[in-house]
Image (cartoon, rainbow, N blue to C red; front, top):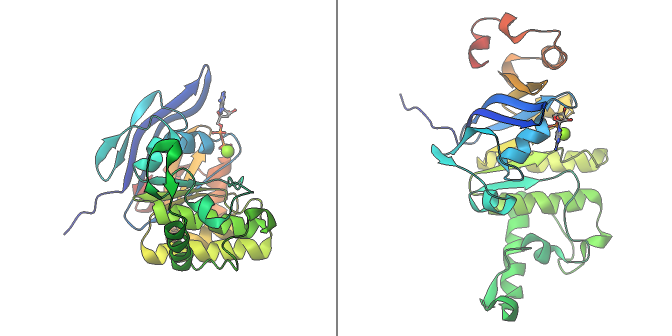
Length: 262
Ligand SMILES: Nc1ncnc2c1ncn2[C@@H]1O[C@H](COP(=O)(O)OP(=O)(O)O)[C@@H](O)[C@H]1O
Ligand SMILES: [Mg+2]
């Protein structure tokens, strides 16, 4: 039997802000090609977890491993360089720039790289952007238009295509459809399903249980600053997940074989 190594493995991750225990002793893992969801009530520690895993903040204690190697992230850029791409709900793109400029923001391709005197390779960036969008199935009519004229859904598709194009290890989506309408949400969900087919590991934070059950293999439940358990989507139900989120169900009382992962 071959034992697969997790792409991401986290143990004993803790972040306290003074007396506030935002996250305590959290354990988490993501297998190659796996899509996982993070769910939990407001204040459960989801955003804190994401900040620690994406280098926005550093943990008090705990281990983060990528492909078995212990890592630490000094900054979000550091986390990106080590292979973790993040898409935020706030549609963090530059409105006045076109699609290729947004995709290559901070990692521009150059003919000659002399810092401020660099000569940008616009043609290469345009071609690579077109390829990145094509692999995720995102359609943009005019690549040279600024993002200002685009809908929230189109922008989020560009952000996800960018993340998918650069992610060496995994993608984290923090409430990617929170600001979108129904049709745009469906479009983003299609792209996420495409990433699943391509085997790109992904973590999605979502309040939308319909979406979670539609998209992921495994659901991780956060409650009051702890990760209380994970459930295979195929072995649980929305009712059970709601019970775990609210505390109505104690993970210790779940059926024995299903409690193995808790
Ligand atoms: N920078 C901070 N300073 C103090 N307390 C914080 C900070 N960030 C988060 N918290 C607290 O940590 C807890 C977890 O918050 P958060 O991770 O944002 O939860 P979630 O994203 O699940 O809603 C909450 O009680 C929140 O008020
Ligand atoms: Mg949050």
